[in-house]
Length: 127
Image 1 (cartoon, helix red, strand yellow):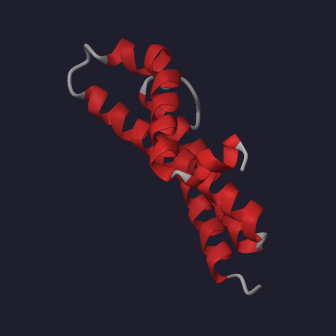
Image 2 (cartoon, rainbow, N blue to C red):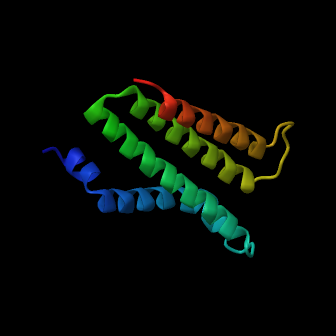
């Protein structure tokens, strides 16, 4: 068994690595500059938790698709990936000042609606 498959099959270890990876990637550019902003850090941590969950579910979905090869799993994995992108956009929007015509939270909401649509399509698809 390869190192990747043993890692993905051990879900607590995979979740731990995803948490460490996402927090490490976001801590310096996004989280640490906002620690002095009162309760704003809780909002940022909420979006960070959403990113962790979405990345974890995307990896599990891709792994399940590689084993079973159904279109439902492929579509579900894409839905989780779109959710991860939406959470990243929401997190970045929560840390910046709005200078654009369409604020990032609107883009994030459109991505989340798209994710729900893709997810529903994958669930109700008849294979």
